[in-house]
Amino acid sequence: MPQPVFIESIGLLGPGLNGWQQASAVLLGHTPYVPAATELPLPAGLPPAERRRTGPTVRLALGVGQQAVAASGRDAAQLPTVFASSSSDGHNFHAICEALAQPEPLMSPTRFHNSVHNATAGYWSIAASAMRTSNVLCAMDGSFGAGLLECVLQAGADAEPCLLIAYDTGYPEPLHSQRPIPHPFGVALLVTPRPTPRSLARLAVTLTQAPATAMPDDALEALRRAAPAARALPLLAAIARAETATVVLDYLDTLQLEAEVASLGNHANA
Image 1 (tube, rainbow, N blue to C red):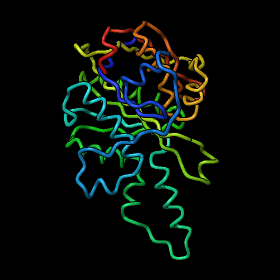
Image 2: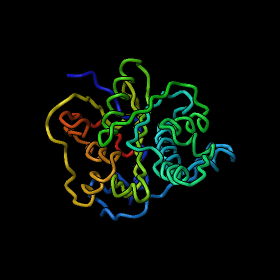
Image 3: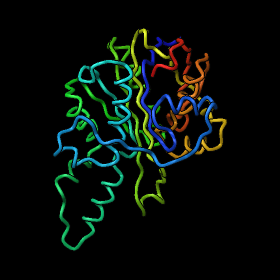
Image 4: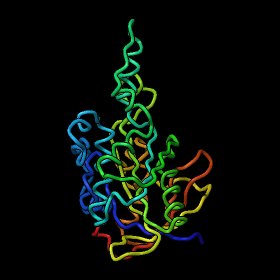
């Protein structure tokens, strides 16, 4: 049995999912799932000049991260972070490609610094005044699984809390046709090495070759498959149910993550 860690709080934004309290009712089946545009908040904590430079990707990542931190009551500046995204800022990449295709290509400095995969982590460090370590990962459709594995191992090895922020916003056309991610989706998990009074669930992760767990609701399953960060939905549903359960999450082509989840009775406190 691998060393368990604990989920203390959750942040969540997606189509028809606006925060853990509302989303957990949907995942429990108490409220029908009604797809709607993802509500992206303004990036709190950034100075006006930095806020103007941000796009949907930064607003999504900061939004879910700040939800999780607020629910935990912790100081965001003191939390190591893991960021995971399959594509980062696809709209910014599209704009750069358009600019480079012009007869006289000109590159905006803002576009350039937003193009790197760790740009979101940089904005987070400014908004949270954070000076702790930050890892930024990409693993195509397994990006959430890669981020979760990194966060779990880091929290266990360093014996301190770690914040996972996974997010995807997709691309405009023509890139959308090649890599369709129709809806922004982001999730944040605050992982601790020991249980706390706020802990929602105990989590133990191992590797497996079993197929990934599907969502029983067709619309939620379509969402799970559409956005790499939404591969978190089976895990989130297990936490919402406040039961002991095992779910399998996408990771690599032939290797998945098996997550054993046990409720600690605080499922309403996220």
